[in-house]
Amino acid sequence: MDTAILPSTLLLTLLLSVGLFFFIRASTKDRTETAQLVSEQDEAALMRQLKEYFRSRSYRVAAVDQAQNQVTFEGFVRPSLFLAVFLTLLAATGLVCLSLVLSLLFPGPIQLFLAIALLSPLSGLFYWKKAGRLEKVSLKVEATQSEQHSPSKITVVAHRDELMELQRALRLDKVGD
Image (tube, rainbow, N blue to C red):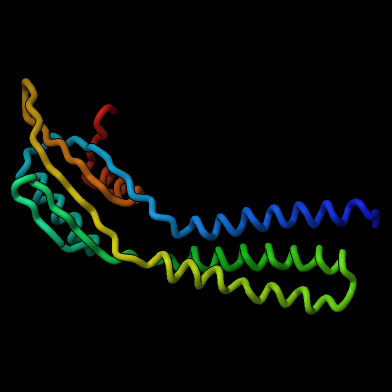
């Protein structure tokens, strides 16, 4: 093979490996966001519905601040088995590719280079250990004054996936939409 092809292939493979590393690391990143949602229901009915929603999602009430009309829920979010297996397969594929390029660049026993792929289960283990954590959801409900009715405004601090599911399940609108 041409001598310029192998080093450039190694460089590209190393760059892809760096991208894979950051992708695996980002799989456990905290994605907490704040959103303001609006409901047409009054405060009392909305609060009952919110408590029931979070109870059904295995959250429990952790703190109540009556003065600010704020409730904090917490619940354990389990890691995804599918994502752990997927990340392990991605890491295995990336490490096998790196092994093949190294074996072409440095001829010798290919088994030594392919042994690098045995490290791939560490990515799934890393995800599994870091992704399972205690999540907190903070809600602050306040009535807004309108001419015809008084819709409720909710300020929610939660994981972005939980925010989307809450908005979908309770048919809440974002402020400004």
